[in-house]
Image (cartoon, rainbow, N blue to C red; front, side):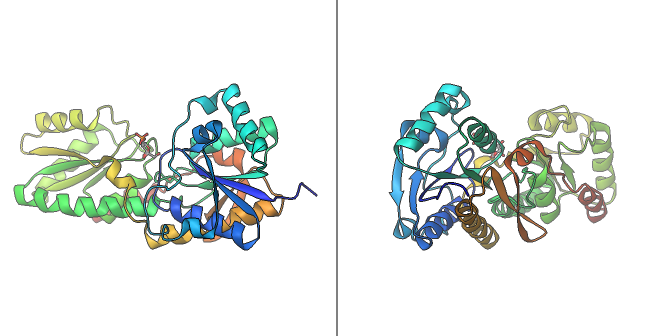
Length: 328
Ligand code: F6P
């Protein structure tokens, strides 16, 4: 039998993602439902170190389910990476009588949480929130679906101008070292080529594919490039390289950037965030700790935080083969 949990704190950390607010709402309302006190920590680990906390109740989270970003703000705290920073964070939790933490974030957030749990044995549940979808132990992270939709709406617009000018567009999308956003938005937007870090297409093959595309009668093309792709050139150098080697192509670059992370969360992300937020509180009340809660084959599952951090969420490369078929 562990300690009875009477007060839970919730924070968002790392890059914001659409749906984080829906998850905060789910955590706060679950606490209210189970008559547990709830505290919001502002600016992630940095806010925790500095004691930037606020009591929250069911009404504190009204009308936020539809909002992008995070009402709790977020940060990538350098101080929390130090032992001294983590000690300060722990002292804040103790001084404020907080019994457990719900961490909404990605890889970096969970790595910090895992260390913190090892050092102070403090109860923690992680909820995967990042647009990158690069977390092991869940099929989807909160915000990924919305980011995909943001990307395809943007590419649909780029397609109009690309086709009007008979141009080739290189569209760079986010994802850090993972190609989930590029691969799935590329399929969804009907891209001619998709470049992801997990698969080395190679410059030669790319040129061949573009030549083939021209020969088949295509006058304009979209190539989706994941920001982490290691083709050997950044997206601007790649544009120059293509123009030098294929003068028949007029190339433009569009880096979609942070617009991918903003806007109202999709229904999928709202529902996912709500399910995972409720489960996180229930797990803590059940004295479970050091776990991440995720969605696997449409079922809510937990795995040890350590596995979530160390494991590799494999991308479905079969989709690349399909993309070749679809862009013939
Ligand atoms: O992890 C989410 C993400 O948007 C990545 O896709 C991207 O590489 C990174 O964050 C950008 O971070 P920042 O907003 O700190 O520049």
